[in-house]
View 1 (tube, rainbow, N blue to C red):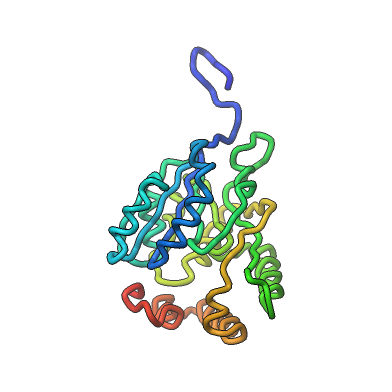
View 2: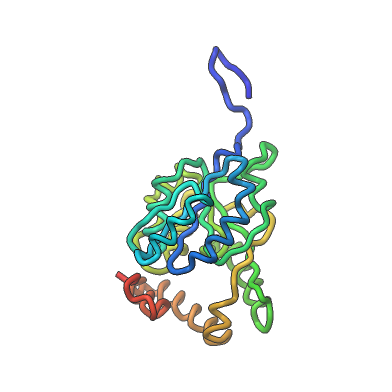
Length: 248
């Protein structure tokens, strides 16, 4: 830190206090608790952790996470709404959105705190799916290739964005599905993404529950319909058949 005309001037572009990590949750409090425990070393150094709960039935259980997070934010259901509500509460210069079923290495966040690394305005990480059996390693490679070529990433890839840029585009669009796709599309019009090294590991539970081939085909079909102009709320009813209350 330098001093210029009697005023403190921050020379380093990054500070451990500049990052807010936002975790949306709906019915997966146990996974959130595991993830928060992993992130505690970052919090001890100054990073801010926020949980965005969209399930009213989980409000009391979410409140029990208060010792592990800086803020527990209650909001109407819907991942976009939840993340926007938490972003409005966050204080960091950078906002990083991390799914509850993700696993990460703390080294993943190093670029935000190093003055020797150009962080960029927004970006994402490469993805791994675990357990990585069957078609899933290929699926992950194709997702990573697609996101680099198209500048469109999914929420599983730990999307992050400079607060001012996030606010300038109005945050996440208020839609029940494909909110991450739409956010990246808008951000891509502002600046090209930055992809730091490292992987975010996401759970294979959806592929395990519904079957790999069926899940892959469903995701491709939903994405194609979205690009052709289908209403994302209608698509969400297909993607979240057991969570009708989220689709509105």
